[in-house]
Structures are given as C-alpha cells and as structure tokens.
Image (tube, rainbow, N blue to C red; front, top):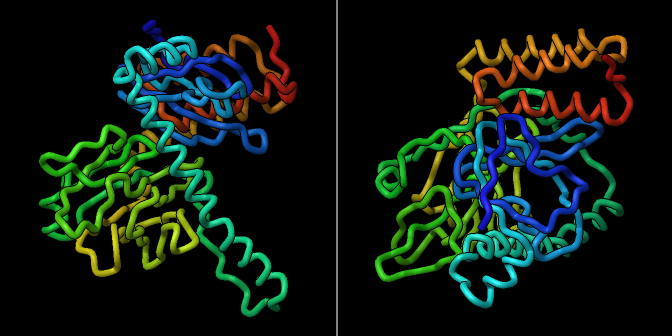
Length: 336
C-alpha cells in the first residue's frame, strides 16, 4: 500500500471532499475537526495506529470532518479498490479497518437502543409542567484542559495498564484485557484493564471523548454499564454519554459495587507559558484581522510562528483553521 507524508499543519482531507481513501497513522499526530457556527470544533486527536476516513471506503459520501497533521506525520493509504481486493484475498491486513467499522456500528446501535427512551422523555416533558428551574451547568467552552486518568484503589491500580496516565488522544478507549487463551481481533482499546470472572469490565467498555473544549465519557455497549459521578450509562440506562465536569470525576466500570474505579481529572494546564502563548496568538490574529483584511505576509508570519517547532497543539491548529475558514467564506479579505 502507498504511504504519504504530511508536514506540520498540512491538511490530509477536508470536510466535504470525496476521496475514496482511508488512512492509518504510522507515525505522528492528526487533529480531526468540524466547522460549527463558523468555527472549527476539535473532535479527535489521533496517533500511531489510529485510522481516519474509513467510511469513504464503504459509502459515496464526502468526508464529514477535516483532518490536519499536528506534527510530521506518515500515513498508510487504503483505497476503495485495495480494500475490496484485500477483503477477499488477504482479510487479515484489513482487520484494523474492520475494527473501526465495528466501533462505529456499536455507537449507532447504542444510539438506536436509547432512542425510544429519549422519545418517551420528550413526550413526558411536553405534558408535564416544569418544576424548579434547572441548575446552570459549568461551561467548558473556550478553555484549555488536561485530562488525567488515575486508578482509584489498589485493586484497580494492580490491574491497570498504568496506574495513572495523561490522556493525549481522543477518543481514548478503555476495555478488558484478554485472558490467556482468549482472542478477539476486533477489540480496539488504548487502555486495557485486567478483570476476572464474573467480569465487571467488557472487552470494549467505554471511552473518553472530546468535542471542542468539552470532554465526555461514552459507554461503548458494555454488558453492565458505566457510572460517572453517580450517573448510570449504557443501553439499559437510556443514556450512553455524559459530560465531565472540571476537577475530579469518579468513573466506575460495571455495577455500583464494582471495584474497577478511576478518577478522571479535568484540570487547567500547569504550563502557564503555553496558555499565555495561545492567548497571545489569538490577540495577534484578532489585531491582524480587525479591519476584515489580512495580507499574505501576515498570514505566512502567523503560520510560521505556530509551526516553528514542527509541532502544533489542537488549539493552535483550530485557530489557523478558523482563520482560513473565514478567508474562504469571504469574511476576511486576503490581499498581497
């Protein structure tokens, strides 16, 4: 299969484009984003081994999001023709792609399973008079966060891949480690957990996901469900996804008496210099485009400042993508 290399900041594919190709990351990092209300929302941060654009292999629809290299990145390219040939001649080579398809299928099936409950709740809400006004939730939008996953007790610490990790890719998938003699080629996890019969943890249990500056826990169709801060997730709970709050969040895999527990901490980055640089970059872009115009030289200087160290954060990439989107829509005039 063909391999391609992308420089920092280079677009791999754009939302709305048709390619008939999927990409497996061999090295580097890629940000996935979608335009929401005129601004890019970061949906995923992907790394080595991850696959993107796989739905182009089985549908004639254009890409639904944009993929951008966040550092020097090499990808393996799978075309529709190669996929169809390999599925008949050498199916083992496409197992990673099939695993992604099954992950999507689980998500769709879970959504369909909870839909009747959601409809019932909507009908009830229409005929039931409102009681006390809802509590206002804390908004994470527009903020930078760092996500930490830490074992909550010695048993969980012993059975975990690592007692504590900083989550740097999204979605970040958690699931049960295979026992000796077990095998499931469609398990697709970033963090595996040892468990014994009777299992609390499913092979594909839950994931930590990102939407812009907001972070969520999603149940991935687990058998016994997931609990986040006392809220039950799973097809039997009529809810499969809940937003993480700033600070510490208690994550329980399985029933409420499960010992498989983690603390998921959402905190502001300790690197205040990085946050300050991002604010300075925002201010620079705002100043350069205050009159609705931007020279090519100014644009090149902004890009050079971001990509100078051959590595870019998702937040920096989103700023550039937002700027380029405004240029393409005519909201900012690009001149000489």
